[in-house]
Image (cartoon, rainbow, N blue to C red):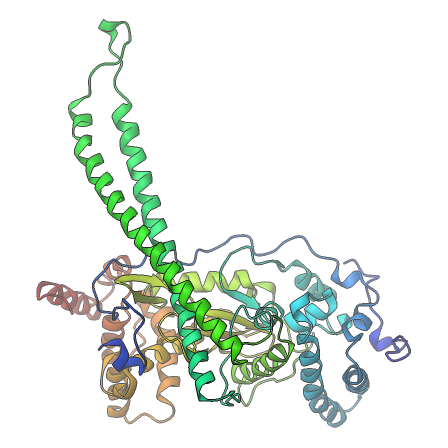
Length: 538
């Protein structure tokens, strides 16, 4: 291998000597049993929203103390690794801009071929050099300076947050192991026949029911835990009787306040009894859904419509989809160079789309737009957070690749792609969430999307203003202003747009209460809320 990748050239020498309406009409598919529309009754979503984290780094790993990092990154990748090594050397040696641009353009497709090769091995776990190629685009450590290498080494490796925010290597491993479906593309995969295709769709729907039922159980558990905690508090107050001096310190009778607790305790016990019955029903339904899923899976396996336990081909194809995600994040005029390179990357760690940094932006946005991840299932409004894929590229905008999966629109997670090295991380994340908001609203309105709801009102305003370009792009820009400026009382939106957003993507009540004192326009919107509330709501 050493002879294949001769690194005697000083371009590759490490400098580590330096210190280191109804559902069926909306979605054109049968509703999951018990699924309510979003205006249905039921409780509001639980408050298990994204929470900001303070610790965004860890002790530096020793990634770049490995003198053989580059060789290990390319080892075992065959002919494509030799081609990449040759092209990269020519790029780094090029003296004049024309040659450098030529080799740069040649390097890009070769690099993406290499990542497909590495992707096929992601399911089994990768050595650090290969993992960092997929995760951060770090192929050759000397393409980064000392501070940049330290920054990469300090990024937290494991998912300690428990949120569906994934680095590319983690995502590919999940796809290969069948833990998540591959991302939808315009290309349609060949099916083993109409019946197999139908069973496959039914299988996805059944899996969605199982996942949604588990989420419902999780929500009920949180509610029960809160009620149990309240019951424990009431009982502690009840048994804390006052000691009486005239009886040598013996405890006296219940006080008037404590006697009043019997009613409160009885109420909590009734609530818990009802919750317990609901929980039993939920588990019975979960068992039924799991039986349905297992039956359908058996049918699908018999028809050859289920992939193997490990599908390396799926991971390779998903890597191709990740490349398309990167293209969209970067845009036509952006920097499509796929490797992390000190000349292209000048920002500090705070602007990098690490898992923790993205989590914190999501927490900030969800606080201002609390309904962004909410869906209603069985009269319970729960959060279904999309999968977030952190794509190593120099893009400036995040995208919503799909708002939910093709055959399970009711309960599946969508997926967002966030560029890892944007000029402004907050802008990149908010643009992806604006894209999600638009696509979800548009899919739900179906062929009425230009007439009804959030997209309908916005589209009508857009056409009345005779604006040019893509209406979705304009919406995303306005959504960014809504979250970034209007939430602070800085008026940046058109009056009509502000009214549409205030109604269909309302700020939480505490923010509204603050804004009503920040200007006449917010006072008027606040009064409209009160008027609607007095006339039986929206």
